Length: 153
Image (cartoon, rainbow, N blue to C red; front, side, top):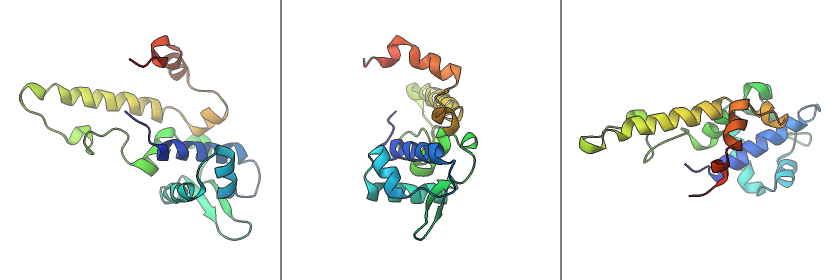
């Protein structure tokens, strides 16, 4: 599984909004782009997708910018990724539950579904507030602490 640049940038942009959420003023796209080293034009498209998905709100004009549409504790990493990339895990662009295999390939279907379930469990179990507070859930911390997690086979 690969996390696209678009998904990585989206999570970083939403995180930047979360840590700046205390003020009344929306955050300009330029500010987010500079803080997270994201190409501004690319970020504008991402923010548009996040707005359409109800993750962020925007305000136009001189005092305009972006803010989270709901509390950071109510936005999961999965919400952000889905907003910009669609389904979390797909096989050839299809959801695993929509696939059928025959013959010796039949055992692949439950494997892909299990993979999807595990990825979703992690991404749906971590909120933007968790990341902003540097308080990842213990199961996620435990997985990240496994020595093999940092190795490339």
